[in-house]
Length: 437
Ligand SMILES: *Cc1c(COP(=O)(O)O)cnc(C)c1O
Image 1 (cartoon, protein in one colour):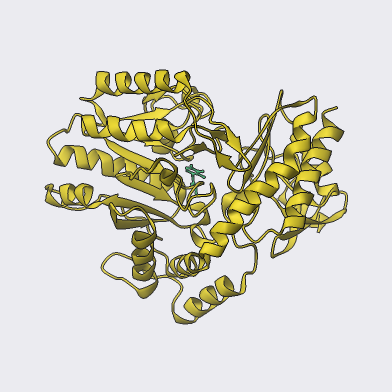
Image 2 (cartoon, helix red, strand yellow):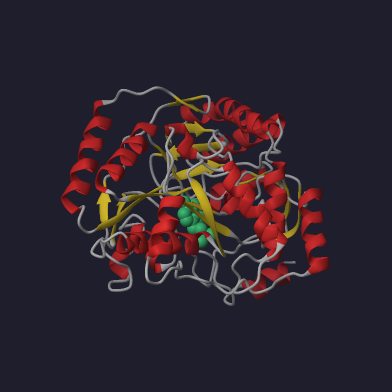
């Protein structure tokens, strides 16, 4: 296997990593919550995947129900074009998505990745505005510290600094940004009630920004309650409820990007539900297929769909080659069938267990804060994490994490047991204590 790592080196780009290292770990196998990994020095690790492969593998690896769904569909057909054709897996998945998401959302576009679903949502918002007599409304209001994907339209609504707007002038569009909302307080994985005057000030700022640009804004784009890859920041649901009111007041759409937060991760089926808010457009991805295949969905309300249908184009102007891939739709429908109330209860328990397991990390000198929302645990350091060293130190303790910036965080699979959650907490705490003395 070390041969594999040598062949990888200089050949394959890894996400946001230089071609010449640092070396990745080779995966031999993955089953349940476990990854079987090998380092460049030949060391083997059987590690709990505390990342769910970036929010995706919520049911763990090689789940029999998901494996069977893929096999059954592969025995029929693996892919067909969606232009002029349809199939049972796509229709079943769309019916299910409409059923489980907020009532307003009635129509489904099946895209091939999260970023593409954001592109579709942006186009949908612009098409909606043009169709309702506002062709000048083509910009977006987004939130500092947000992350919405790596394609250029999506980059435009990412945090302008993290999103590297300055590096891609002309390619990445110039959008309007609200400050990052104040932090919410959490206790044992649950949001605490909040009456912070800083939140009122943020809401006033949001109202003023949208009011000042209402003639040019098509939609507000936001990750509800938990900003993910932009900094694992939890903010009060009241901010989201305010954005809903502001959007309504100015006939601007509210696009909720739940690519990371969807399907129970934050302790509610969808994070918008913490605020009792229904978006006009909802993006889903990541855990949609239980992490088996790339697939994303854009849901929209009847009002949005009707406007587009009445427009001269009549269609949503998008259509990727692999849209609604049957294998991906079949495994996504199977993944949804596994998200029973018992699983939702388990997420809440994971939240409580993670708070206990990560509490000792808060005592470390290098740690600024520990926060837990649902099955997401975040340890924020006072300075940048030594990613390579902390990753290795956690692996030596039987846990796979992938820190970034000043954050060591975990969102384990929902099948992770109490002992494994304790092991994750101990490994994260131990690794930080060892590396950041
Ligand atoms: C991961 C992510 C995306 C991008 O999805 P990809 O499948 O990586 O293109 C967009 N928005 C949010 C909130 C995400 O977490």
